[in-house]
Image (tube, rainbow, N blue to C red; front, side, top):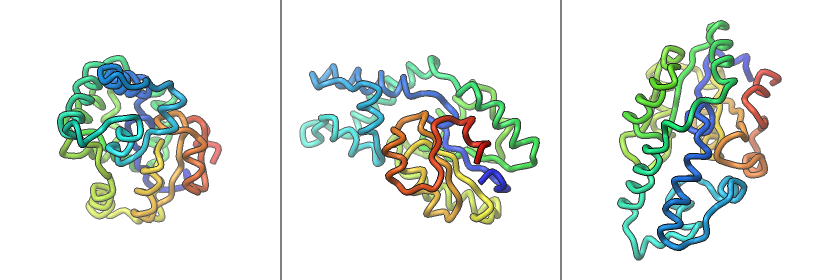
Length: 212
């Protein structure tokens, strides 16, 4: 897979180690609603895309409360905790390694674009990427349309691209784009959940990528 000429990185949970702040953010909301809080393990088992479905699975009732306000509440919590997160320690080594091999690298994220730009700048990795693509809203919606646009605008050949991600949605995106995929179980979903996708390569940590 690392023979690919280009690499598309997911950001949250793949490059950015934000599992703990995602968990804190949702638990603050669950406590407020007197709903059971999540452990790291239970969070990684229930988190999914679309995220509205995940909210419903942990007890949110969108017949009684507004989805738009709920999404804004999460982003407010998450944004305030974001300075507590950082990229995975091995991420810089991998980014540098692939850069030295002449591979083009991209970020394809479900994070809102301005927040994504600010986060990438704060961890000082922006210079590794040919494009940093987020979405134009706060609802963590599908990345497929942006991925297709990225492939087309940079004239990439899908079979020469490998997508690295930490969720089942990343595998769905890779399939839609027609590119290869490696899923890393160090982020927002468990290795069991990732393996259920049928993705040929699922690893525990970023460092395991170079073994494939």
